[in-house]
Length: 265
Image 1 (cartoon, rainbow, N blue to C red):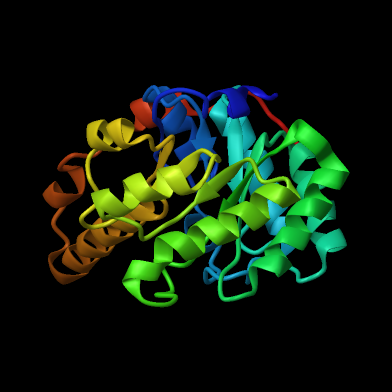
Image 2: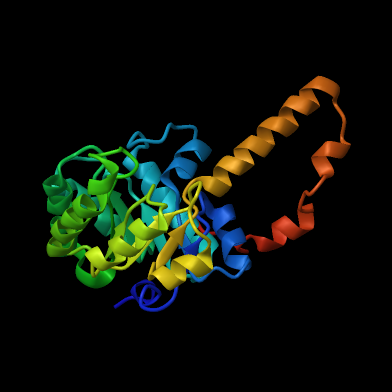
């Protein structure tokens, strides 16, 4: 069991997701127990759209950057759908992420059949064993699969398939109703991961319901994009300096967060 596995045993693991080495350093400095990435944030920072579009080499390099920025904290990488439909290719990428220093991954079913994701998970586990915490993302709520009253059962069915393939956790983004969350905790023996989402109960309530992991996803990154857009729009309009300084971290404060020394890896 890796240190990242152990963080899912008791209580609620809160992950304010990072998207590059600098944001990983910031997250680590603020007391997070681990650092996880948001695929959307990583892609946007590199000038690519989210949705399995990022070249694999950029995924691996981003993982290395985040591991370096995390300063020794466990790191989990969002690898979307694995960037391939071929389980062997997905497993090879997972192996490269382990070599980069990752202890966990997210991998999603998206709009595909659960058996397709299960095949990828099985291939990953055959390749890397217990070196990775595999968090299987079930998109039943995000994609509105079936009627609302059937989604807990469907997610439980998919979770069982993923668990049989070797998954270590189940991620159900879009699930927000407290009664459904309680039912979902009972429907799976895997640690349940939820996504920060409008209407989601707070951390104390989620802990009481038995949720083991809460992810910000792209939330923090999206907020920063919104703030950057507002500041840029204003600066283009009037060239005023003062708004740029409101709430800003100072140069020295930010610079001090960054890992020191060169690393060409």
